[in-house]
Picture 1 (cartoon, one colour):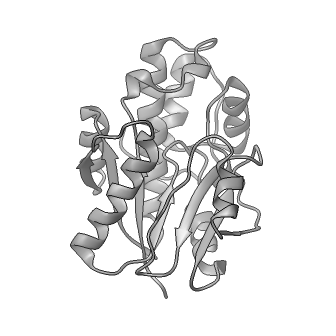
Picture 2: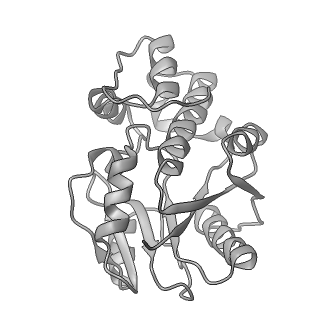
Length: 224
C-alpha cells in the first residue's frame, strides 16, 4: 500500500466565502468554514493510506482545530500575489523536510461531504508516478492534486481555471464517482448540493443552526 502525506491551506476564516454573503453573515461564514474544515480533516485522516496532514494557515482558530485533530500546523508564509499556491508549496516542502521523499496530496479544505472511501479509492486507482488531478463539480476547479513521485515538486496551480492549468502541467485527470470529494463549497447552490449529499457531523450541526436542512447517512465522528 502506497502512503501519502496531505497538505491543506486555509486563509483567515473571517475573510472566506464571500459568495455566501447573500445567505450568511460574516460571522456565520467563518463558523461554517471552520465546520467544513473540521469535517474534511476528519474524513481525510480516516483514510489508512494518509499518514500525515499538514495545514498551512494564518488563522489561530483553524490552527487550534487542526492540532486538536492531529494535524501538523505551519504558519502561512509571505505570499505576494498567489497566497494559496505559495502556502501549499511551503506545506509540501515542510512535509519532505520532516519525512524525506514523500508522495503528496494537496486537498481542498472545504469538502464537508467527503467520504473516506472516496479518497481511499482515488489513492488506489491513481497511476504510479507523475501527477494526477481530481476535477471539481464545476469542471473548471481542482478538488485534489496527487504527486506520486516522491521527489517531484508539488507545483500547485490552484485558482481560476485550475483544472486546465493542472492538465497543462502534465497531470492526469482521474475519473471516478466521488461526489463528496468533488463538491467544494463557494456558493449558495453548492450548499444545497452538499446538504443533499450529506455532510459531516460538524457541518450538519452548523447548517441546522443556520436553518439549512442537512443530513448524513454514514456519519463520521468529529469534534466541533
